[in-house]
Every structure is written in structure tokens, then in C-alpha cells.
Image (cartoon, rainbow, N blue to C red; front, side, top):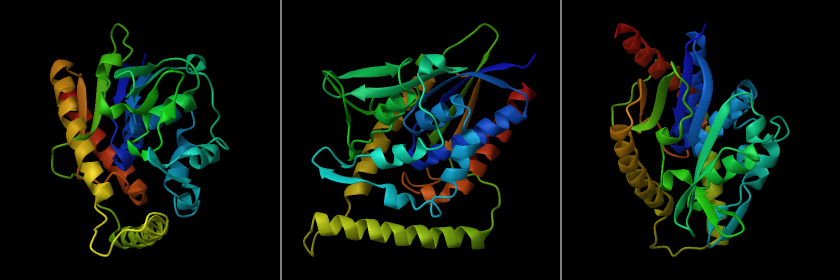
Length: 292
């Protein structure tokens, strides 16, 4: 009988792509993931896994330029967020079906934050896409999700590593993946040429994004576009300290740490590299677990 695993996946923007490599390695080594809880990108990858569509998602996320993902960004430029997110989710629905969480083959939990009612929102039933959409709503970037009496944003605002919501069963082991660890970057060797090609393509897309932003919201010649970096660092600092408190309180059986310097929040062009970084980290952590 396979060892059962309750898996917890942190948020972290593009770094959350590393969860794919972690999950692949956990399964490769013979574990059975029966439960997954995640926040933000962790909710996204965890939800895709729970749907049994990880391979399709991996192929898509690793082919961002081919699928012209930037053309899927639906700019809203409202005071609540720059991107609505509807286009990318509609595209994903072409190959990933939306189902109710309670109908999945494994236990799934996603976390969001209600900024009106000042509380954590935990999804354990209902539409998995609605749960993911709420959990990844990075403040000021993605427009929040409206409910009857609330407004939902990225769960990392309150709980970026939802260990306390992990579904457990007797004899299981708790594996937590933290993609915001304050450790040096540790990654396997990759082709420098391939990485440079992907980087140049992505940087062109980013320039197009900023050009679009400037046309819609002109800035003065003396003003610098430090908005995204400022928000990124502010949110990262907040989620980092909240996560450390949770890790101190709830001790996992296996903690897989991935450096917060592995990529920036929006470096999705690094998808293939991040998958391998996740796999590499999982191999090392599981090896240490076996030594105990």
C-alpha cells in the first residue's frame, strides 16, 4: 500500500509553477496524494492536479509564447485591479473542465481573503474555478471576486501556506511546499542558450505590456514605473512573515523549500526551469526524509 500524503502548496506567483515538479517527483517516488490544500498559485496547481489535468496544464504553462498568453490578458484598468482574468480562465476551460470540489477524487481546499468582512474564506465545495479565481486575485493586479456581501482577493494576504486546512487521515504524512523560502537559489543545470531565448521573447512581451499600460495610464517623464515592484515586495514581505508563523506552529513531516529568489512573481517565461527547480528540491527533501 502506498504511503498517503496530505499536500500543502504555498502561493508565490510564477514560483508556484515549481509545485508541478514537486508533485511529479512525489508520485514518482511512490506516494499517494489524497489531499491538497493551496493558496494562490498553490491553489491553482493543486486544483489542476485534483482535476487530473496536470499534464495538459504543464504543457500549456511551459508554452506561454506559443499560446500567446499576453494576448489573453484582459486589461480592466479599474481602481480595483489591472486585469480581469476572464480571458485566461476561459482559455483554460477549453482543456480543463470546471467541476464542483466535492465531486473530485481527492480532497481539495483553496484559500482566499474577504477584505470587506476581514476574514479568511476557505473553499471546500462549489466550483473549483471560482475557488481558484478568488485565491489568485493578487491585490491591485487582478480584479477581486465579488460575492453577495464580500470582496475576495488572494488568500496569501491572510494565509499563504494553509497548513491548518490540510485534510488529514491516520497514518498519512504532511508535506508542505514553500516557494518563498529565504534560502539561496538551488537548481539543476539547464541550457543557457534555451533560457536566453525564452528570456528575450518574454522581455519583448513585457515591453508590449508596459507600452499598453502607458497608453492607457500616461505617466510623466519624471515618474518611474515602480508600481509592480513596490506591490510585489510589499505583499511578499507580508506573506513571508505570516507563513513563518504558520510553519512554526504546524510542523510538517516534510518541508520542501524553494528559494523566493528563484524567479520574480511574474516570470512565467521560466516555467520549464521552475518545474525542474521544484523537482530538484523535492528529491533533496525526500532523500533527507528517508534518512530519518
